[in-house]
Amino acid sequence: MARKKESTIDIDSLIGENIKIIGKIEGSGNLRIDGLVEGGDIDYKGDIIIGETGKVKGNISCSNVSLTGKVEGNIKLKSKLTILPKGKLIGDAEVANLIIHENAYFDGNCKMIGNNTSGDKITTESQQKNK
Image 1 (cartoon, rainbow, N blue to C red):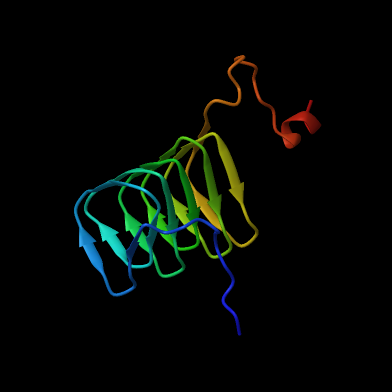
Image 2: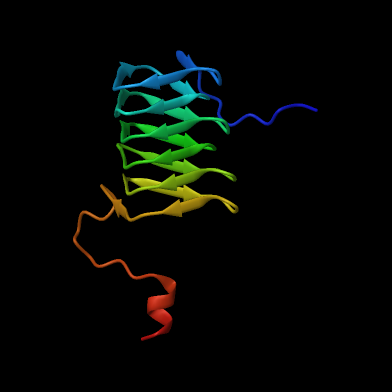
């Protein structure tokens, strides 16, 4: 059975399933995490894919994140956060775009950046029904 592709980006660096990194990670390019990163933040210039076996215990700052694993920390992105099925984010997100798939998990607050520069109040569908 073929494995479903999570992303079509080229990977520059890989943290494999059997790797545990303790401390801060800085770099550029595209990073895939299938192992464990804890005890420090990730400050990256590029995109990060966190695979199904990937776990991050710390804050992430980069361009885009595709999440199928688990993150316990805050995420600050220049562009898009995609939480795929089985993906878990426990922490706050500051993003321009947010996509949460069915069977994904998000426990935290989200601040949208860049899309609502006019200062207009954004109302959800449920808030409009209650008016």
